[in-house]
Image (cartoon, rainbow, N blue to C red; front, top):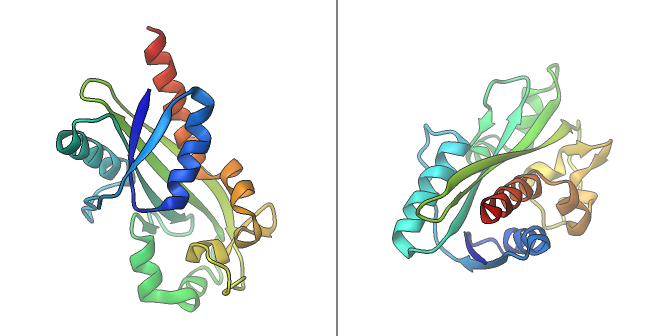
Length: 185
């Protein structure tokens, strides 16, 4: 079976291939831009885009959307992590949690649609927000420089180690299992 992942991110494609290959599902990339309505949840965005891209390409697709969630603030930065980082920077983000709950999550919604079967899965990675910024010289997502997993900055994890625990890998795994169950019926 072949699935098409809608993304321009080569690291995301590699992560998907790593997970889905364990289920004998081939992943091919379609480099296209998602629609990201501002008022929707990450699950609504992934579902909307899965339907849209299936209609556009007439191929079974998976689409993901990721948010960052600070437990001190309901749904913030939510599905706008890049916008909030660009507006506030590290200084502003760290100031927000200075005397607050420092727990946070990366949360990814992945949706599969093949024209008939439609389902979504959510994966989470629990983190703590550090008081300092790590590894400004390393090519990682901005939040990975301030998020700790098991006391260690996420920016210090190798890509391979990160993929073993990631929110996206968890959601991909759930989708792969659901596809496998569907194929057995």
